[in-house]
Image (cartoon, rainbow, N blue to C red):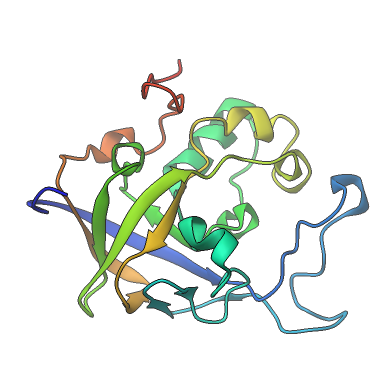
Length: 199
């Protein structure tokens, strides 16, 4: 890991903590209720979210699950959703429907794959390892708009492993990285192999 010398201002728009997996089964059957009215705890768009090193986000469905540790914290650039909505001629999407833990504005995420970086929301940096792309699933065609599944290819976000404990908070934040990030590219689609940008 290089020194985290690059500071990119971002905004944390949403922090989704979800105790249950809503997109379960077949998309045509519909998701589990967002409000938890059928049973169990609710999903929440929180002001803060506590991250525990080696475990994940407290209260989230992947917290402490060894099989998901490299994906325990998921990030998404809201510009990706905005680009897809524009491409499909759709109304703006509700960012929570993508089911990523943190929705950011101004965050180019692809260069962080395979690297260690930090997100500092004002309570100290939370160290993360960008492990793999958060590939979109077929549910996106139902939850966002027809064609969203394909349009999100290469810009579905980043799955991360938490390397330190700390608190994420909605509002202004800073991404600390060892590579320069370009906020203007936050919504770009990038192929997983070789980082080639899609037209």
